Length: 372
Image (cartoon, rainbow, N blue to C red; front, side, top):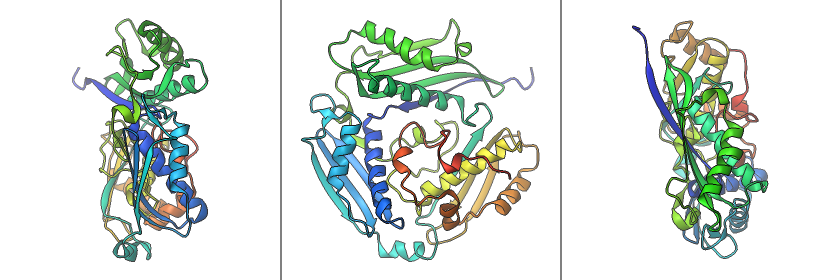
């Protein structure tokens, strides 16, 4: 067949106790706390966790004073970091704080409505799932969330909070046709047998989540393939804000501008611009203008309007891409302040975005469907 395309695509997700995601959650929880007392807070916070120590650093300009150490410890407790031998101990860990004010040079441009940094960002959508997301990443996120759900509900009480999921999907002519491989590595207590864990993860997580029509006799399942995952969290790996940018977005299926999201207020276009572009791409597809859409914008620090806008619909568009760009410019205010106002990004919503991807989940304004 002349146009026949056959390939495999893989995406990954992580559970809420993965150290990088714990760092993201701390940063986003601090951002939310600042915004609760001052919606005009300027926040750029990075978190590093390793062994039994947390370091919070960054720049903050806010009229709200918060108890950073308390928020750090509460967040660690929330994700199950309560054991110094296997994760980290929220009660006894060391918390270091290195926060300064936002540079006055940066504030010069932001105060007048300009972008808080220069950069490029992307948005993407596809009609291959009801969430308008690539199938591999949306399934990986659902499996990660299910792992956390069965742990916290007590269905599988021996599970710990650290874990990773990887999903490989087989495509024909750009359509997902079957699940080729599911790989799950999940932290557990030392007294559970591997065979029990593998059986119960298969029954209570995988088979409860996946579409049975997407698996066949050749679908492969790998559950804790090393055989043991007792030591995890910050005791096994360093966690750092912004290191899971592909997990946060489209699972490697679409391009990424490089800027991370967590810990940044909406004047940083790395975050707000990416949210807006997801909104636009999703609605291009939902409005029937294309079956797939990737859109890129570039901003300059202190500048109000994007330097460039580019759309690629991969040959699936029903009207010319130039006309789609024209419609987008007419429909949406793409200045940083316009994006903030349109998506209501001064609200303390950010800790809810941290886990299971920033896109493809309901409850966020950038996921709403509108007429273009």
